[in-house]
Amino acid sequence: MILPGIWLGVSFMFARLFLIEDNVRGVQSLSASRALVKGRWWPVFWRTVIPGILFFLVFFILMNILFAIFGAIAGAAKMNLMLSMYGSNSPAPVAMASFYLVNGLAQMLLVPLVVTWMAKLFHSLKETRNS
Image (cartoon, rainbow, N blue to C red; front, side, top):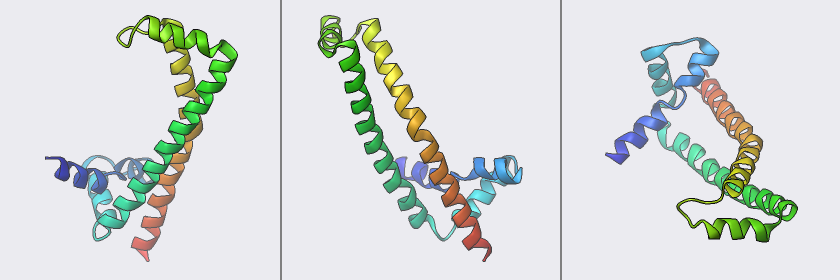
């Protein structure tokens, strides 16, 4: 069940970009995405998975750095005390708000990189398919 989902996900991952760039809608955008990936599934898969892992690692590191900075400003001992005092099921509202703030900042910095990577991969595939 998982492997067909991965295959379909890679085959149809550019459907939204066809919709945005070429105004191809519905089943035609799915067909265009599948045609773009056809015969190059493994290279597209690896060009998506490896950067995805790297972006995740950068996100994790950036999140920890931002959380350390925010903790230094707000008082890390106080934040850790609030998290441990309420247990894992219901953390303190201030600690959770700071976590979501840091998470949002990290995403704000990294999501444009991921979108740019996917757009560059899309354009590269279109250029080589049309050549």
